[in-house]
Image (cartoon, rainbow, N blue to C red; front, side, top):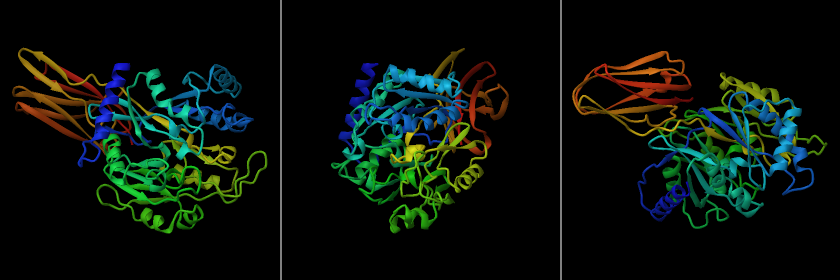
Length: 466
């Protein structure tokens, strides 16, 4: 494992040294949040960085998030130490939260904001999963960060997924939004900022993102540096629902959020990778200033845009406010296959964050075996893993024949039922590929089976998410 880590580090260094070269090749692609999850990562609050009572005022939100998520996916909890793990088990048991889908990883950490410091999961072009370990410096040195910065590398060892060290560039997960079709949306203030990346230009940063996230279309807002600790993360006020729709606020609420007028224009005129304008869904702000459970009026309203998409639920921040129900109803309308659940974040909001800030998705993954070659009566066939996998728009299945053959390509669902026959004909020797379109499939795990001359059968799994 350590040898692999060294190799990937050297490859990363080579990539960084060539960052000024244009037209970099995409090496990794990050699935969008709505893609099928293996699980969700949480860093549980503790009192080892900000005592006293940090854990006590926050952990009700973590109990509620764990309860809602565990029914549809695994919940991976990072605990500060063994004593904290035992405490978490006790409070979850007391709250009646099942633990069969919950596991624990013990690593000291500074804070709860796993979206920003935790692992970013990506797939390479062959369908293998990697963890990207971007640099994390406490939002430009404004908070303790050294323990949190080590989390992705430590988790790589725990779950045996190779890590790619990208520490030469600082990038927080909450500072970027991906639409799943090659577009990234972010504020310059939280990335192209001397407190994060003083030696990198915008073009160099974009090349990092193209190579390691698979994005080629960029929607850059200026943002406002120094307004708050994150320097205006995008996920507080604008999110991608999918490749055609942005979830945000009305202009008046964006102004209240102190988004510059020029940024509001950019946001409302954004185009996707195909040059098409986005559709927009608008969430309100809370009707009133947020008041914590202990009665402190924070003096500002709350955003509902900072929600999190799980496999079966959408967790939306709520504030014991009249607009909670309206926000939930709006999100339920655009996520009809998931249950939208409010999570009370009044106390968490007093510390500057909401639901999306403290969650991080791990995509569903079955390790491909690579290209498969079978020799049968002098017939040699190669079937490749579909790419991308998982896919949310389209994917390509490729195979190679070394002689003219009768070919059948079938798609089966997870129950073994035939969904569709893609190919049933004679094909000439050589390379062949076929494109599958997402509208023909529901989210889930499928198996595609290639049959050659009715005798040779090759199969691979693929994942569809939308």
